[in-house]
Length: 199
Image (cartoon, rainbow, N blue to C red):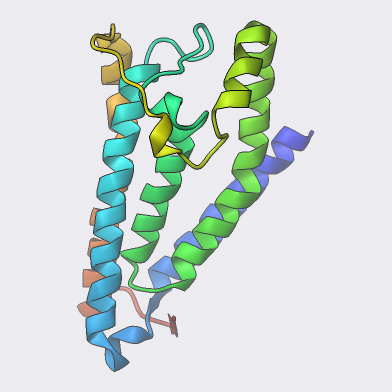
């Protein structure tokens, strides 16, 4: 019941956000075009970090998931680095809208949704690896990485089939930036009207 409600809420949020992006323009553009460009630059930097971070996580987790508890690489700094880098990348896409409202909405939605996902995943891991996971919880932050904890092995066995399968899900931030640029061009040539402006 709760899972279905969460899915419906996610779809509703995605529809509202898409509508805002499609029919709005940046209020900063006419007043402070330099700030507009700065927001876009911040967005591209965050998208780059988010994409590379997700690829790094995928390299370690691909093919293992809950079957084996991964505690090295990005998973030595945070128990959920994949979600951390997803937030960074999604915020980056938000900033390419050249507004503050879109990344703020993304951050709020992320903060409301992902704690439930994290709790659900940790419940499974605790059931499969009880003692090992408890030790991991005590030593490693849940979400925000602690750089001083980073440990990487000299060698690591990667599952290439799983890595390749997950590769494209790490690139969707880049594709979304392309979509944002297409929407901006459609606004400029007046194929999609700008009905309101947002900060």
